[in-house]
Image (cartoon, rainbow, N blue to C red; front, side, top):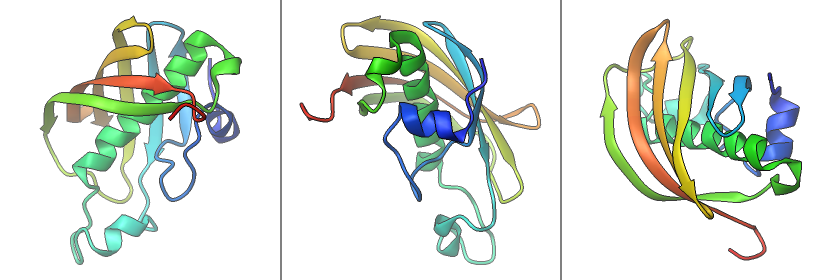
Length: 148
């Protein structure tokens, strides 16, 4: 299943400048998803991170992993769950292997490890041209916007 930007925006509440995935190219409900982030020189964070040597902040790579995971959750639970908020509970084993720069395309591989109720655990790896640039395991709580 492929989900374009309009489908992502129906699934999760994030908007510019904090919507950090452009497409989901694979989604296997209750199993895994692959999200795409096209990194461009126009990203606001590059103005200060770092002038003369733009590098995508690692925390934003982790956030792009979480947004891909959120689309996986909606793809698993169904469209009636769209727009729910995903709150980080923990981020473990985060590793950043090489800088991500304008012109790179992140392929974000997210795999559901388990879920119990509204708490989900994921393992994620971000790659550029097949080379791992970041990885992490994270736990998130899925909540209705009205209950948050």
